[in-house]
Image (tube, rainbow, N blue to C red; front, side, top):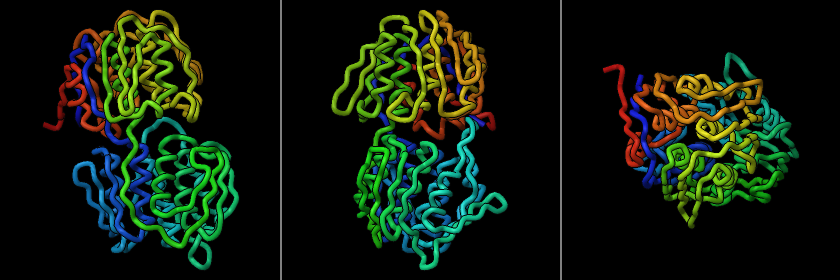
Length: 422
């Protein structure tokens, strides 16, 4: 199991090129199953979750290949509609193959998913929507087994999600694209990754209106064709590297990104004392003072993203004052708190609320990554800390940050990957 050894007191400064978004690439890869002709997807990041999903799709007999940041997919050789536990257990996004398989081929058998242990993320909203579209759903021995209604096609319906769900919205709009009739979906997620998926489906021939709003209307078509498409930049990777500048009075220029995807975070950065400048495809964060304290409340998009909560908390740990953070999305997303406290932070948690009293500096310590985004908060904190920190269980960070140690080295971080199996 790999570890990071980080010698801190770094000033994080320089340029970093942002990769394609993991949270966009995964549903786009799943959407390739819908196409009857070959599809090409560009700007696909090299991440463990991406490799896992490609293996899962290839296991269905589909010809799918990744070269560099480009994935090509041809579904004509598919010979099964099964997603096994040994692949699905590592990542929740595997459930996104359920909608495309059910819509195009009329059946699917997909293991219930795994992923980060950050709280309950049930798939009941996905299944309720498919049942509303006429599917017969059973859950047996940890597998979701789905059959389309008689005739082999899902049927359009009116359905409103009980709660905002990114994965549920994505799964259902993929299924509805090939359904018979019109589907009207209410209380849809508004995240940029959902918009990216809907835009790719339109490029494949889907008929979708209301993209980027809470109500989407999908007029089902007989078939979808392959297309050439590029994954949206990763807004969370962008925010994570920019956060390093705020923690170390640094200066980071993020390239190949999009400020429009990150406004809630950039506003908080400015409130903390950073100078933020932006261009068509770049964002620069410059920091010359100790961070100001802020209050943060995570919300579905366009609110403050839960995937940036841990990174912002790490900045707040060094602020000149007390910050309050309220986590509204996941009930178990403060597992990084005891690890940050090991580095010298002063954080108290009461339910969904964390009170962060700023300290002047972090002090190096051995810590353990607990989930994907928490991993990055610990890496950035260790980079700012005085001394050497060893971060364990960094397989989490490999799931969501491409080429992370080389990008960090280019920003001035003294980081070494240690393979404990050697």
